[in-house]
Image 1 (cartoon, rainbow, N blue to C red):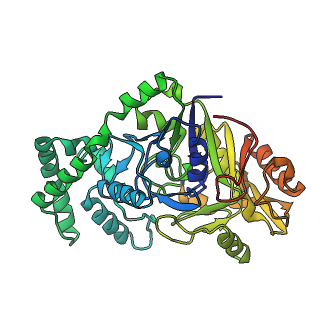
Image 2: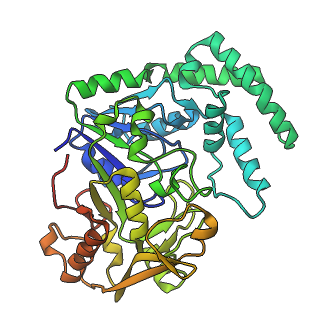
Image 3: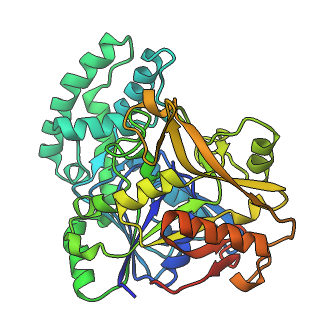
Length: 427
């Protein structure tokens, strides 16, 4: 077993990473969120209560776990404080949380610009949550962004904010949007910085020290690999990379520490927002899966698009992220379907292909090729071991392993932590 484990979403996000991270966090010393912002949620059931985390790592419920929000994230200070207040009101007050001083800060003008950019696209929207994540990453790479550590240095923050507003207010004005007053914004974010000051530090130094002390470290991201800015279905992607390959840059650790990766995939496929979806269903089977799986966005409440499991996608993710294992989630949702399909390949303009095309134009034209398996009707939500599963359910898992060349080590048969079949101890 390894002392580090990376949990990656092996589809378009919403795969159940929160439950898997929460499950493995029970044996971890450190949980690190390495990218994304408060535009994606993890739903975790803890002590019979449901919690929706947006940017805070999943280990926050355990007072012994060190939680790190790393430099690859874009962090909205207002959102973080609101999340902490919600946890406090639920009685979660004993925790360890550290925030990278190098993480980009999501400012109010980012959300304003996010909404404006989407409305300008006129029918070609990306499907952003309009929380300012993309514009915050854009400013990071344009080198006009504010970083969390900046909020702790009054004079430096003043200079950074003045320079940013020169550009942002011009852009907002050109779009017919209200501009931001320096004094008000400066005062607000200085105060936010002071409230978060005890948590803000160089998390790379902290994390490397913890790894050198042989602590068990769990890395989690937001979204899924198919939303990766480099390897996802561009441009219908997020603004960062949720891959295991991005963990070293996003956290400030050496690549040699990223050597144990589990991909989390639903037993079917879902997608939120726009973009091609080769195995999408539009009939009563889609509605059946959507309702049984409660397929509505954690943060937005949007109904998720639903389709069959796509092993072309899973093999793409396996190659990009170096998957060692798979966790198959919401397996119980398929119960009651007479026949279940798995996509094994695509046809593009009549030619068989086994990869995800790089352009939306091509991907929107692919025809999914399927095999069909017999379903099962037995209730599996109380099953505790793999051997107790119905024969057809086991055959489905075996076929997924065969098609992806990846071992399925976790099978989730319900939302609670206890409704988890562990076939192999990996962490």
